[in-house]
Image: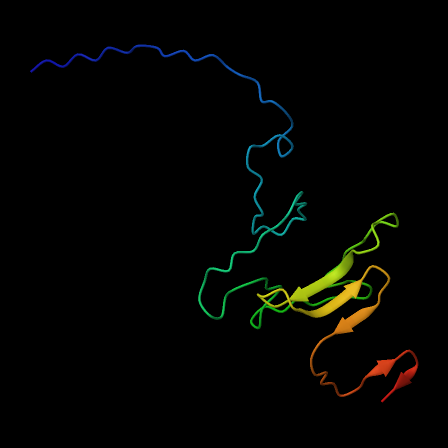
Length: 126
């Protein structure tokens, strides 16, 4: 038998990237590497998963995060010119009932029972 292969060169036009890597990418993802990353825009955490793996989890029992001085688990800044009715943190039930709120001035509202070994209001700790 005789086999004959014909090689046909294929030429494609080269298009330069539209921007620097990571700036004009059509999809920006959060990866699992140990480098710092910036996510612009809203971040939605899926509620899919089993009963132990829903919502936002930072660190875990098997690999807790060890912090040093002046580090924060959660850190955020609200601009000085923000509207009056904005919050640093707001936790609500699925029906929209506010259970925990810290407004931009630090005023804290808690709905429900407070259980603590020590509770301080200003300098008065009990």
